[in-house]
Image (cartoon, rainbow, N blue to C red; front, side):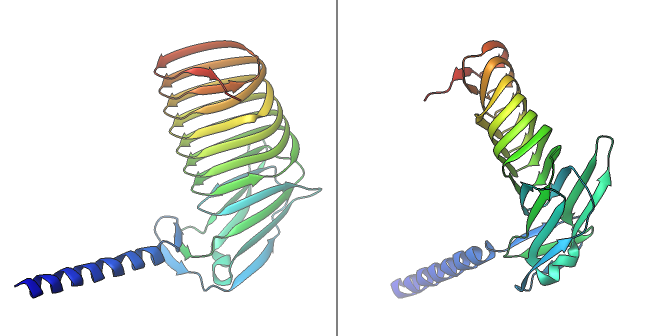
Amino acid sequence: MEPAMNTTRRLFVRISALGLVAASLCGTVQAWSWNNGERITGNGDMATEARDTGAFDSVSLTGGFNVVIRQGSGNKVEVKADRNLLPYIETRVVDGGKGRTLQIGPKKNTSLSTSNNPSFVIEMPALRGVSVAGSGKVKVEAMKTGGVDADIAGSGDIRFAGLDAERLGMRVSGSGDIVAAGRAGSASVSIAGSGDVKAAELAADEVKVTIAGSGDAQVNATKKLNVSIAGSGDVRYAGSPEISSSIAGSGKVRRLEK
């Protein structure tokens, strides 16, 4: 009886090990879908393609792509992905009430699967807005511009490195994060969910923070800080601003420790 039990135990261990290996292999493949349509798998042959989109001043990303935005004299869009997936990655410019937005995402009714994350490099003279819906990541390199709005709906990330703006609005709905460094005349933070805003390295004269949920905010205010919290989220601040606050819940306003 004992040998049979040992054989069963060894068989269970082998099956478990095979399951772990399969899971780790599957973990290297990512998929992005729109309406759960036709599934297209990347062929591993990486290619770079320039897109002629026309002028735009905002970027809207849907899906799990990586995007780098740089300041340049004109508008340029370059995408790198599996060659057979390029026709299924859309870039189009849409006119809005305040400007023109470059929309990036998988083609409608398609599901893209690849182990090579599609990436974009974008150049633009000025940035008015950037938004992420899903798990995408956007990095905005050194940028001097007017007012900018950053929005996340989902688990994606937006990072500003070396921003010089008149105003920066940051809004998170979900678990995504916004990280900002640089300078702005004023800044506003709105968090609904568990996402965080880390802007202690973004110096602003006036900062307004609104939190509904468990997300936390780090800010840097030189003159005024207005805080409204409904939930467990905390606000930590740098600088020596005049503070006004309204708190309903366990959230707190604290000075950042150096």
